[in-house]
Length: 285
Image 1 (cartoon, helix red, strand yellow):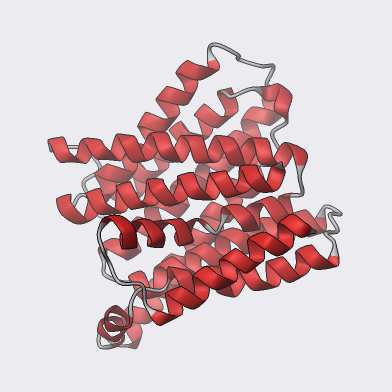
Image 2 (tube, one colour):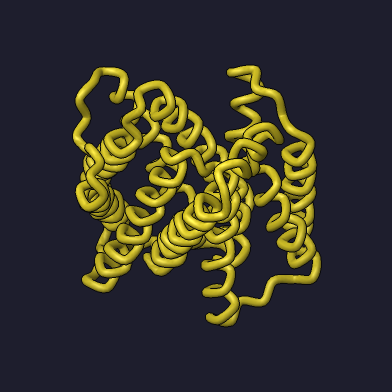
């Protein structure tokens, strides 16, 4: 069940990225889309939490704040990198980082997955990398911009990966008895962080056009994905659940291929195959 929940989380994250990315591309307002997504997700989660508030402690809220800081940093630097045209570097680095950080935390806390699961993890990490890479022509365009451009994209990707990895590792410390309020707090803190980062770099984080409202849809999907991830960690290893949840780029690529008729590159096809192999091995293990 934890593997299925983590896979559902990855699907919801992938759909959220698809909606949010498409909205950002068509409006050119990536900061405001990210802010609205997080704020909508946090507000909706808080309303749902009123039905079953749970019994969160001060420690649970503290971990939620840590996760929210990571969520905001991850979203902010990912959007900055994507908005600057460094997708070929930022996306794969951030996606692998999101898997590696909680993997390391889980192992440090004493988790010991089986050998078959380790084979799945070994397939998942390169799968995440390859499926996150754009088509060959986009990679060539990135390469033409020079080493400084690539180095900047790598930095954004590393910071985004550390942020999302912190989100996963922090939320895993929140017990089932805490309910959904810490999850709502995480989203709201992340929205504040995104607004602060946007203001620091001179970006506009306030929604100013009607199409940006699609960011709220992405936020609801993202909140669902985070909730599924949280539930999955209650019944499974963080080191395994986080790796499966980090397969979300595969779902984004499949949606782009089926809905937008975008062509899947050779590297992405290899990545999709490795992701499918990883899920099968982890589930069998």
